[in-house]
Image: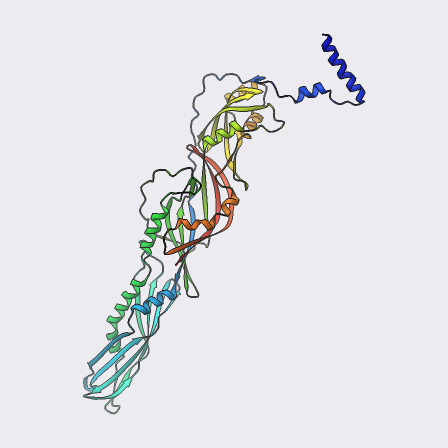
Length: 464
């Protein structure tokens, strides 16, 4: 008792000597000292807890539209036609003209010009002819007809990814007439020349069709590559999960045709590349004349729920939080798109608590947190019996864990230059442009959390 009185007396003297109302040192020590372990306990559950029903639908991202700009060199196509189509389209000798004798002729093409007109690829070449009317060894009249050969190829591909057949036409801009018998007989040989050119025009049509890109083969190769999950250099796996292809409009700029396509997919960054699922066959191509310049891609990033459990167990309580507690052990499971956490508490408050909460993903730092913490009726009653407010207690528990997604937004913004490895075809190069990037939420799915990022932009696919 004498010791106790001495402590009290010393505290009073210290307070009086200071001439203020400061809190005594012993009181401050008692206030700032950690609370005694298990000062409060949550009562047992009655009856024993059962596993919470899963409820809700599994999280699934909306289908992304990854817009790809593809370029076709019109000059290169024209050069290929120049190389493979002979300059001489047709020639003939001894074609009967009746009383006017016979006709000799030759028809040569000029240079090819390739352009985009509306929804067609147009190939044109001027045609120059030479014709002579002869009787015996004497040729008495001649003319030089001119024409324009035009081939039109539909630019909207068929559902099988192939071009429709081209249509070739011949239009004479200058006909050919010969005068016989001193001008008494005029013979128009233009129809005869047109008939003679018909088989050559069919040959030209086949040659043009053969020189068009084999889009079907390219689409098959791209679909096969894009269907493969690819391990990332620093761990994890990128799975695009393509589900469809869409063609947009084709436009011309200088000597280049610009085509837009969209890859419909559900891309995700996963923790590991699992055994590949059977590859779906290339789906029919669909068309969208209003396909925009940019697509909207929702990229999912997987984080194991075990990582959220560890984040509970290693969390540091916020300064001033009461009761002071820590999570000795956590088990986390998906409950629909939310999570259910079974927590063994230690510190000032001991006991088991079950929390339900919503995962969120926002901001630039790539951190998944929990919000909207809730306790069911049974848990709320046990917390209230321990002298705590159930709602405030649920929010305190939900605020404990913070889990990092595989990539922050600044890291993703810096990633587009590295996307070229997605396409291993030596015939093409790939570059990316991202105009905006933002976090758009998170959800539980199976044994993982999935954090989603929405990106707007496009890819440029160029032929080497």
